[in-house]
Picture 1 (cartoon, rainbow, N blue to C red):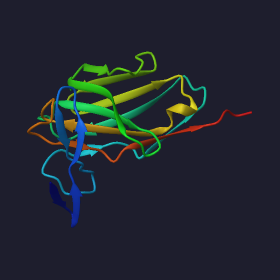
Picture 2 (cartoon, rainbow, N blue to C red):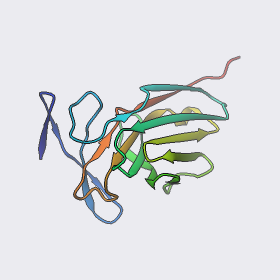
Picture 3 (tube, helix red, strand yellow):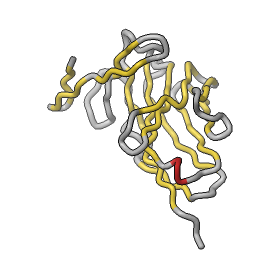
Length: 156
């Protein structure tokens, strides 16, 4: 399936869900979408050994209750890191370590991801997404453009 956005054809991408297969509709803030706009900074810097670094995300439609954080390392596959079904609720998904990652969702429109004990292996692009439905079977999940976390070496 294809969708026409800003004079560019974008293909639906299939991912394996928890119990079933579903489709994620990739839509960035520079495209025209009939959905939600996801805003997240393009880059965040941390230093190897920092206690933590925080990534932020905002969306503009309170009907999009579900928010997600995905991690993508080195252009590889996207891994679901955090699932949030609504305000004040967010859970770190297995196999990720809850002492390494935590998330907050103060309102339906905002979410943040905290990476603890920053190290070089944390360098990746972190994508925030939002959807009206949990399984995205009949709804699209809209993604931000991603926040690139760059981990700098220690100062000597």
